[in-house]
Length: 403
Image (cartoon, rainbow, N blue to C red; front, top):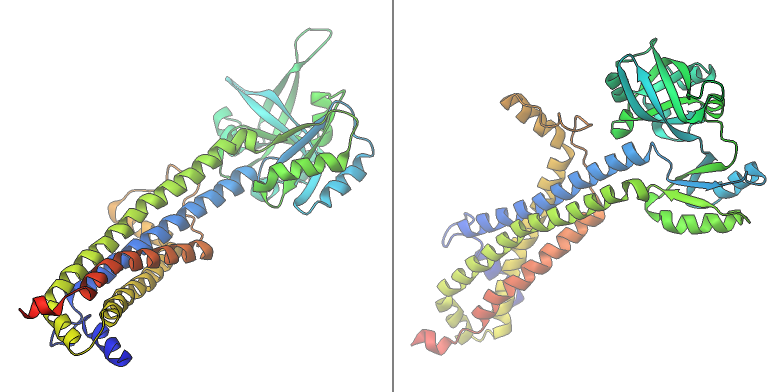
């Protein structure tokens, strides 16, 4: 009997009396496939943009900054203890301050970072002109390319740096130092608009920190920052107050907004899949109504309600599984080649779709766990909505149909 049930389920996928797939089968399968593919594509692109934000912004700023008004006791030992934490990748002395930079008629505020060739952020990987070794000369500075453009100061030219917090005792005016622009960098984010790299010793002389010391920490998992801060305070165990600053305080809102946007867009795209599944339910419901006579004949031949239910449920799951698998194939293929697809569209219509972003490609990261969740949710919904027409078919009363 199981073989007969299987044959009936398969036969209902084809046009009656022919070997061609029925229009219902084709449209229902394509609808489920497109709905599944769209969700996978949207999630992959959102994952890609989130990772780009994480890399280009969080890769250039300290994930955690620990500061206290006095010098840390046994500074090098504390750095080693911090680096032993399982979520800490690197730790080093924190040298950053705010100042004013001027070139010609252009004056802007900037963040100055004291660094050298041991830089732990992504600055060293994104130098466009020059290199960090040039900062050994205390007269050199490396500017973000956007800041360099705004100032009109390019490599080999000079800029003036003003530290408003340091006043010359004789002239009663802020301290001014002239730097040579020895290079530029670009990390592909707003960091390029306001960061200046200078040597460590130059930084100490320019900003003259007479008290206090800071440690910057780079994390392996930036989203575990709160737990890591608690652990690091226990590790340092200082008698003095330790001020902690994390990336969340400056960019946490941006990442929360990105995460919320990904959830909302995924839910909206999920409506496409839900619409396709609902259409499948309506199509199979109409199909069941057309097959009432056949169902009545099967019931009079001794087939139970459970057997009839199995026939239509197997039909539903065949459509669902094939549609979901086809959607996975389309989603993965499109997600891995989305940049090439938009490049073709750009060449056809003569527009640049990525000109407003820091990147000139569509970042896409396929998360297997997310794909699995999409598949499970799709199949559960297909089974749930497919159950209604199947129950309708199983509840057919042969006596009424025969009359």
